[in-house]
Image (cartoon, rainbow, N blue to C red; front, side, top):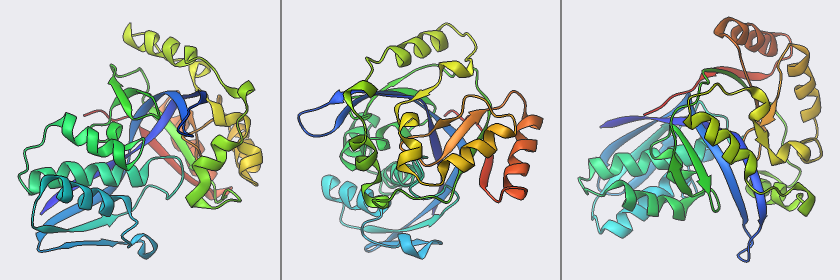
Length: 287
């Protein structure tokens, strides 16, 4: 049996550059993995099965199951695997949980089945599953271009502690259409040219610190309209001292950098116990 950690991600920047002919949006984003993680366990079997401690996710529509089926089909492997997932990353929250489970499944089954695929081959398969999956095969820090699936690794930034909050709010269109609905709320006035992402990348590459004002997410401007109830959570976070709060991915999770672990711990505990919010103190992780 193989046991793998499937790390969550946050978007330090997320810019929409414009709508493409295929209906997707061209984006520029800097992504970072953090130590909040699901656990994926893989064991050899005659067929593919998936179990999860969240029964609602036990389905052939689970992205990890789709990843296993795609890998088996493309490799011609004639066996299977039992896939077991323990969830810690909130579901459909902008933190890449399902994508990370799929990436861990691709990486793990490549080893378990002894397929010998290289990273480029796995990334090509990952891109067919979702925009975040190629990045999450390795994690760390990277630029995402195109739909987010074209990955360019960059050095680690000077960021360590963050508080991530996932409020119990849902987009009115439901989880299945959430990301498309959020992009549908954007207008040309929200589009940028990738300058903010390039500016932060340049600062990271020369080893400078990463002030919070360098962070950006295009969905910050539409988040309150997209998620009824998010504003109250955002305000509670700000009132506890969080600065430069941003959406991660298409939300509804929000995060802020913390100057020290002690500050992050205090804010996280107050969010949990005073406001009843699902808050995590996390640190950045790299391969």
